[in-house]
Image (cartoon, rainbow, N blue to C red; front, side):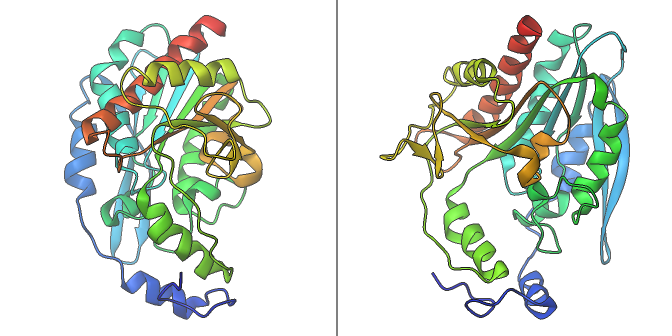
Length: 302
């Protein structure tokens, strides 16, 4: 597949990045669809400002929800969504959990919820930020992504307490039709076609997999939507399926959000919103079930 920007075998220069940026347009409102829901929860949570994204004339305030009854003696659960802004259920699943389920864990855990890490990408329904950088490969020292750097600074003060980190994502058909070809073009590499799994799966940390934790999430989600099967090679997106619906990747090596803390229990969820077998509501509910299932397991095991 020939991507419309750049030359084969040559990584993008600033000229190609500017050309790519000129093709992006606002398709939905972060202020109305996300910030409005965050501030509607002020009666239940402390709403924390943890920075602002600045892209030219555009300004995006960054907000997180924090338990009001915070205790140093309780474990902390971190929920992140919208690290890839186009992955809608990650954002709205996190908000739905805060609205409907969080109260059940009051007094048992501290909650930190950052529902939309990449608002520029949310508005443009895009994986990257305005610099054509993938935030979910940027949770590293001296991060090239404003989104990742801001979240890491905010979370650093809580990091020693964090027992659970659940990072909510989606795998979409546009991964194969747009984002993987764009990545290959940006980096001057050849695009290798892949496949999109039909169903929910999780990505655990290959250095600390906690497979029983991953399986507990799969079990909880299976009551809401279907779980992605392995392909003919026993893989999902090119990685070995180590347990039904579970693959492993090296979080820290790849700069993934789920590896930004030393949480014992960490996972990246992946919902498939383009499935004929799942509705947007099911996708949101699957994310909620993943968070709930992960917390319940960790409180038992931890």
